[in-house]
Length: 374
Ligand SMILES: *Cc1c(COP(=O)(O)O)cnc(C)c1O
Image (tube, rainbow, N blue to C red):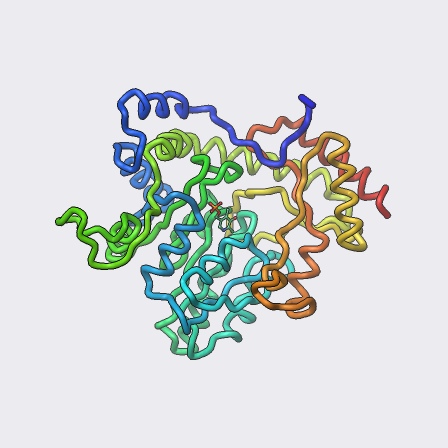
């Protein structure tokens, strides 16, 4: 159906095509080529950090960062359960154990008190996740770690969903010791598949550059003093990324506009709750996410989503809390707040290219289907 509204389609309104053709025409298609450093410099500028390291995708960027920090077997890393699975999987890839914590009832990002209560002698890092573009409270996490006298615990930011968001003028990706981005096809800024780490720690940056390139000695070809990985971004990805970053202001403005329109549309429906964004933040919403307290169960939610789809509107549920996946071994009731939010959470179409008419159609359709499934 041509008038289907996708949940989050990319927008290429800048030089994406021109830069991509430039990469192809010059023959620079692999992980050497001028767009990669250019993309890293531009991203560091957007995030106001000293170093950005581009990677093949956000998941390997998370793994690279944790590995470079020395996280491994016997260690614990605290992560919110309500996130995309990549955050916790990356911890598991290192051999460390993800320790799941709760999210705040109103903002749906990591609950600092709950996270800090789970710190043990084995804890090496806490990863805050900027869920749907709302920034976690890194100042509270940092202060809590200082109170616990645990300056050995590294604070990290999974900013995959938050490019463009700021807290008192400080951008996503700059709020912890290092930040991680994803440039997957549905993210606010995309390179198809892609990711990056942003940090002011230039030594860490250099170590990640070495490790993502098979751990090859930069001065001695094919000599590998340490086991590394091939986690590099290609010049093709970076070409698209450079064009996308040139358009970031417009992309973020469209995201904000669409989100405000949904909020206004649902303002009179008390049961529909959007994330409460802390007053010191300017958030760029990734997805137009809300909790509908009128949904009695997961079955009701899925029935409503199916009816939306019949009306040509693609929507999606919140992430399933990660502790419930069989290989993480948690059980229902372990993190009731996360479980409750996830069951009633819905994301409506969120692409930066949506028209007001499409947003209104999606919002009206939700108001209709939520009644039908009661
Ligand atoms: C998208 C995303 C990632 C990384 O995903 P990739 O598809 O590997 O780029 C990581 N964490 C969160 C919270 C995400 O939303």
